[in-house]
Image (cartoon, rainbow, N blue to C red; front, side, top):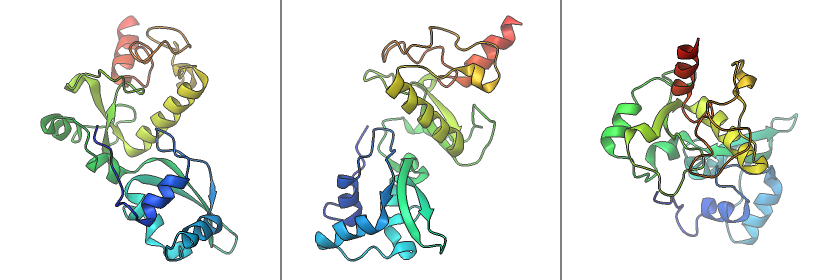
Length: 208
């Protein structure tokens, strides 16, 4: 993967350097006034609340991250946090996925919910093993909403060492393979519902 970088010395570049954003693109809440004060002290123009392009979708910081906003009763922007990578980023980052694979999958329905709305290309292995194969079977189409859900579930798995339980979705089994404990980058994702939802559903159907 080629790392996506903001223009060096830009406000977005500075914000990224001070917000503790994890590998899944998520961060804690940050007070906008405090971010604004730090930015001004570094010589940037004031962040003008709701009108600042740096926090708008597909502009500035929003080109890379999906931004969640908390507002005061007056409607003024109060806090922000990142909740994963934006659809713009997922469409345009330099992931070494062959163009023919990307072109084929982006026109398919989400393997989780069946939606065709804003399809993103997902790595089946949520931990992205370093020796991942660059072939179609290692990727799948997920809509933006379901991809965000998977990121949250993979993030929780990473922090707790416990895999996502398919029984939470109403299925009769938790995993096709392995236990609730994550077993390392090579095998840990296999058998999890989020690894390959279509494979999971097919296996359960065939077992009936």
